[in-house]
Image (tube, rainbow, N blue to C red; front, side):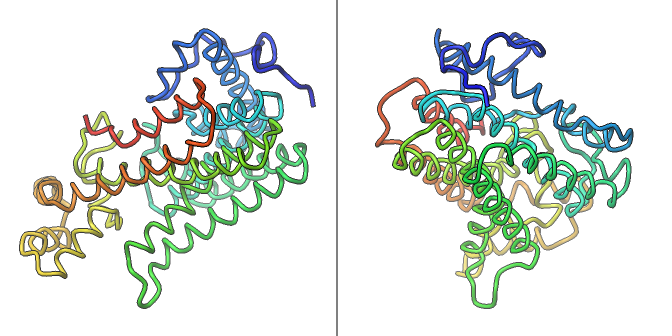
Length: 355
């Protein structure tokens, strides 16, 4: 495996140019740094090449279906976090770039499966795979992408294989627990946070794990980045929950109330139901609206207004921001650096997306 220095990120890219790479929201600090900016942009360009190579197939149908969501875009937050973890861990090298592609492929594969389970019509602004080719093709495409990610990680050593296997197990268990719902007597909010830890936190934690381990970081640095990834991942998803009822279309990327209409038990709704059970009359009225027929846009708008105007939504924001604050606090043992400050800025940005 060819090593690349942190200052060059492996030399000139032969494919996607750095001028075509866009950093996700919350990472503006990187672009303004004369040293880290070029390193990160070049790394992301090379990761994009790896992703394109990974989904390429001699089989025409497999090639088309595997490229479907990849070509639709995506923020590439997970690859970027992997690169930053590598930078903090000792320097970005070729193994870190390979792992960054692995986590994005793993995320991509889960989207194919999630869209089948949710019967989602759109993803990233395009028709979902199961809408175009049917459920079976969509599921098998997700499986194929998982296989490609596993093949790539097999070249990174036994420890990397263990990280991927453990992450995959948590992803599956998170989806399983969401599907079957809380156990008898289990608090619904506790159950939901466990689901988020598995479905979202685990893969973002893997970014920190891969990046630091493959950069040769000491164990204490690895543990810091794993904890940060877990907590910022949960904060990100909790904020998405609130934005669904309190945000604008351009912030969330979907129409307000989508989760409400689909009956998804998100954080504001869980808090609202808890408050209704405790005797809050306004919460009971909002729950009645949620449990009614939300097929019409007018009914959905009324439900959205009832939820967003209730103190449960403010409480949901408070909880999401607490997770982000805990993610930031977990970084305290690390020495100051542009990469660390970028991670702090990202954690802050994920819970301040309502404006």
